[in-house]
Image 1 (cartoon, one colour):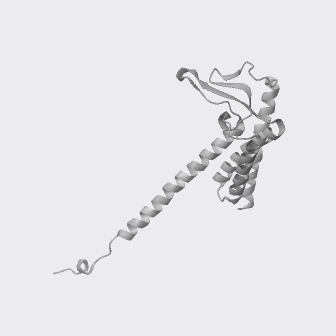
Image 2 (cartoon, helix red, strand yellow):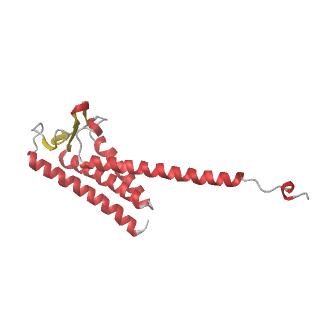
Image 3 (cartoon, helix red, strand yellow):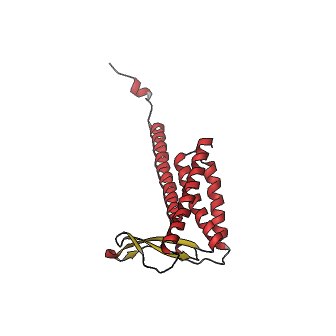
Length: 184
């Protein structure tokens, strides 16, 4: 990996981590860290700031003893670090940087506080849809994973096109001796 790509990956991770931690500090300050306080509307009733704490895992789902909430994200972060430093693509470097920064943001919360601060509250009342309250770290991880899927999808399409082109070239018949003979 070139130094430029490595810097891009590292700076993306640092920026994502910084923005995650900054927003959590700001939300804590604005709400006083009071869970269940009146939400602060950003876009009507659709998008609000609602301070909550998450003692559990992804989407608030419990998945084992407490140490697992640090162990699994820590192993995931190491894996992302490995792939992020290995990639030769700016796009993938950015995606891995988002994932690493987000993962580290939630790991820091768990180490520092024992829980993760969530505050982004998304709801579409017209269709009775409400998403789990989340934070920027979660959004960065999801965005990075989506970017990797998009990259793999596009790479798959390109690979199929190359294989199809090669197959067509292999199947093109040459001129037979009979076709070369022109009777007068």
